[in-house]
Length: 242
Image (cartoon, rainbow, N blue to C red; front, side, top):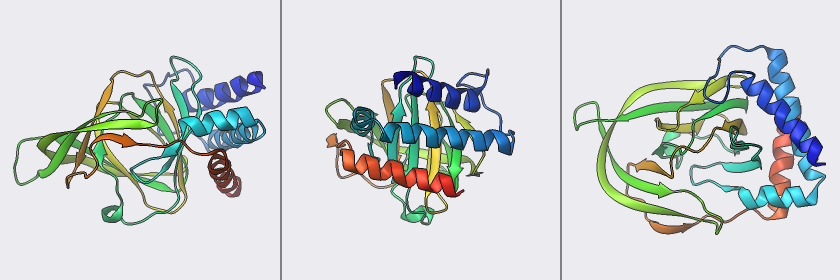
């Protein structure tokens, strides 16, 4: 079965990245390639569901993210491709009602929306002024093996919007790890497939318009095997229908 997982991980990597590597992407690729990527993703999900040990491994690395989606870590295949994962937003609600914060990442990544639509807003730090918004800044050390992460309040900061755009099904999207952004779904059952590059930082910056109540060490429990199975099956069924 290990050979099967290696083959599927390689097929997904080739379809998303080709010979360009994880730090580049192209917005223009045909429907056939997108369909093959969805098929390879469904095949990987089915292979995981048939292997109880692998399902437990996926659940151990996966969790419900504070920004409103379920993060399903399918594989960590190599140093160049640090992670293959699915992000699944079950509900799509107006941006103001979502818990999504502004943040950067420990790695650059390439992603493809497999179902639904995402809205991305890019931010930059700035001085206080008419085009800026005041946020509360935090330093986040990411989720560890003990199923926790740490959040330290740093005080106030001013951000301004640099750009904003929608990312629809079939569109490929690259983001450098140090870019500040906020991502929210515009439709229910929005699903993205993410390939993360090598880790380049040990922590991330998080900005929230209101103070976050839970700071210090924050619980981030793994998914149970039953929850993992239900989450994988739900994604699989949506990808089969589209």
